[in-house]
Amino acid sequence: MFETLTEQLSHTLRSLTGKARLSEDNIQEALRDVRRALLEADVALSVVTSFIERVKLRALGQEVGKSLSPGQAFIRIVQLELQAVMGSENSALDLRAVPPAVILLAGLQGAGKTTTTAKLARLLKQRDKKSVMVVSADVYRPAAIKQLETLAAEVGVVCFPSNPGQTPQDIVRGAIAEARRQFVDVLFIDTAGRLAIDEEMMGEIRQLHELAKPVETLFVVDAMTGQDAAATARAFNDALPLTGVILTKADGDARGGAALSVRQITGKPIKFLGIGEKIDGLEPFYPDRLASRILGMGDVLSLIEDVEKKVDKDKAEKLASKIKKGERFDLQDFKEQLEQMRNMGGVANLLDKMPGMAALAKGAVSAAGEKNFAMMEAIINSMTPRERRDPDLLNGSRKRRITQGSGTTLQDLNRLLKQHKQMQLVMKKMKGGGINNLLRGMGGRLPPGMGGMGGMGGGLPPGGGRFPRF
Image: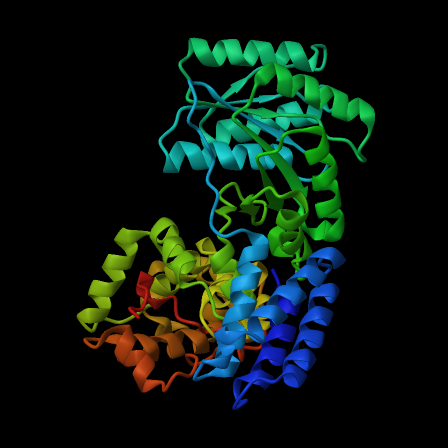
């Protein structure tokens, strides 16, 4: 997300960093570039205009005039204003209600409401230890009812049964009554979507809202629709007392116009970002962290949270102990590290959140995508346990068997073995001194093999499941 905007803003703001002082002329030139970058990112014109005016007023005031580093001060102003556009802080769900706390999800068809309902249910169950029930009031699309039932079973929450022969109002009444009977903490209502906004749809949603009296009314919208997302959110906000917005498919939106427009236009906070199709692909929306990522400053806090949630602690400790003792880093270890990295969203996701690495993230998507992770795992899976422990055993006949079993080529296998050897060298450097010594020894460069493996994936070390201390 924001790859294009990050690239353009970083270039513009770098040109100011070395300035001895900020004048109206060089600020004006930078603001023209910032304005162009925001418009190309599909940010609404009204939002861009007010943003540029606020940055200009602050930049020409005392705030910058007294700064020892005017260029850096200007970047800070842009960061704070980006943060203000998206909301000052994370806005959590308000569940302060006599159970069940009802949460209503609304939006157009195809925005991802049903998947988002399941993602939210999983989040509250696992993170907040809430008992959760979900129900589909989409009687116009039987597949949506079945989909929610399947997803509810996957995340381990109760799904109140419904069918196309019922009215949405009867379904909601029944779900609320059952949630009270079972002493459920939170009830999610997935409503019907339409291909476009119409009065019939709005009338039904209003009736359901009046009946359910939800503590949260969330508008779910596809981030890839850009300015249209903000315009649709405003239409729904005029019809319903929305309490927040969820942007789905945020990982597919390279521009980011929706995230920078929705809050300003609707006055409602963005509460979550939907990332990918996986059921755990939902992140709380932190304006300050996202503003840092837009400016290429990374998002270390979110990266640490990813490590805490998604890294297998037992495997990490086992590998750390192995490396500390000087034992060999074998192909089974390598496979487990690939799995850990994939669980965290792959190389591109890691780089996007690391300070100064955002520019590399776009290239890493093609260099270390899901397909390449799967290919490397397939090759290792085709080896015997003994071959994984000792790759030196791999002669010509063994290599032929492995490539035939994994559906890959000899070149693919040799690239994997080369990358594994480079990772072994990385792990040796970590022995005793830890990853900080490793990074010092590399002089701030990327680990061997990064981006140069001919499509087999970058060599960014997963770090043995550890995260460097800053």
